[in-house]
Length: 513
Image (tube, rainbow, N blue to C red; front, side, top):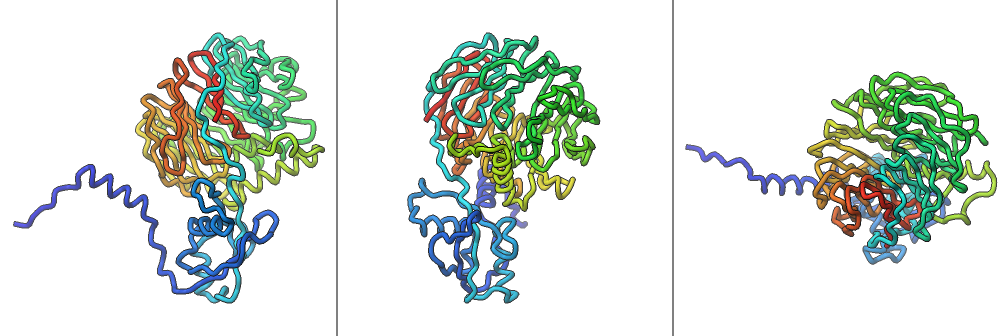
């Protein structure tokens, strides 16, 4: 009788899955051969390091990154910068591809004598340290803190919205309350800074939106009325698309609609109707599209100029809770970058130009288009490239319960998702492939956000803790206890200096390295 092998044990299955994940798929037969390469700066075109000869087999982006770091004298793994490489053949758009170079070699379009100029860009010019301690616990709110967001300009100002019907702006340098924004008659569910840092918009369960002078903390005009149910999400028009002197934003509501508002006249420019249930999240993209996610299981894409529906993306089997764009980080900060006040351009035209350049640099690797990721109660996420197709690029599965929150890293290379299964998961943003499960929380994870240099991630959970993670290894970098109850909201300042968090214990905590 033939011996029947027992089915593989759980341990053997896990080992096989780990092997499959770690092993890079063998590329097609790589011919023997070498290629002369010169690294060049993707922005200025200047040479980085000397001309070197590399065998075709070693031309993977990972090897190129190691090579460039060693050519520039960065030998310590902790000091190495992650680099992104662009296509050296033709028009320098799109990612570098080893297969393309080998194909060109085989076709005879490049030879050993010819030198390939490979454009590169450091993905993290500045380095953020992991937050390790709580530098301030500030009381002031009378109820749970539901949302928190740093100003796009610096880590000195944090805005929070609370169940006590107020929003507050905090001075994080001194750890003191700066302004209390009173006027709403319901819970404040959303706070959103305009990208130029001048206006704070707050959305509430009282069905209204209020605008505040971000510097003085004073109300700008009357509440904005139009929605008939509470406000779930607010997204400002990207600075590089904005007509001078006419800041606009989009709001999403439980009344099934999205409204586009003019912040100066305080009137609705357009109401976008078409969803058949509560609209949970809205994002205004950098190419003039507005993306909305809804409990009707669909994602809709609108033309912001005409107010018309461009696409409906159907794939999810349950409520769509959240969506994120690969360009969120640069759209949020506009013309502000990590260099601070001294790098802010003088004129509006220069500011728009800088915001546009930052947006274009953020989409360069993906061929100039935005990617979109959506998270749902059906325990899955989908990765989309709506400018190319209404079919998803990838169905991302692995969470065992609802996925509540999803976010892209600032460099657009990673996606993190927070789920009710107590886990945070990391994914490759290029193809949606699973990378790591970050295990450590013992209750649902409500929110997560990347550090601006994309090397770290912080997550906020019902288990009263925050955790900081090293995304390269998927291991915990710091455990951050301190809150007395569930942590609903967390944000990492765009300059990388601080993390702010808030939750059921009514206290805002500011975390430092």
